[in-house]
Image 1 (tube, one colour):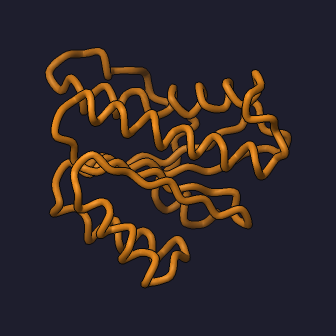
Image 2 (image 1 turned 45 degrees about the vertical axis):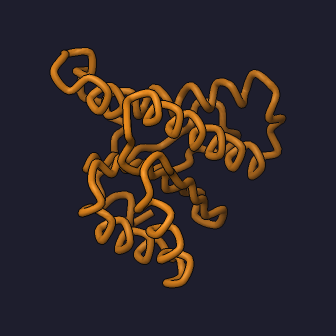
Length: 155
């Protein structure tokens, strides 16, 4: 399973919005997702519902906590690369809408597009590695915007 923590800040009026991205390659990783959801303050019933959804292939979930300005972005195991990319794009739209709603940004405007692009750029290495695990297109220089799991939890 891929885990990634980062912040989004280029087009948001306030300094940052924290993101956690998970790519669940097998159903065996769902217990960890459940624990992460509970740690993020998602109630047990809602967390179980999310995990149940994610146990099916070609699904994803985007959850945002407006108080913490934080989101969790999870993509389930996919039946093929096209379905995987489709799910990533779908959930990316939900996250962008959540951030835009919070800051009062027009969903159809340039700022929304830049926010979506910023999130996409942050998760690109993980997405590229999932689609093409043998090539080097996922290799990028270290990103100082990346957060550790501990840093994410402290925010």
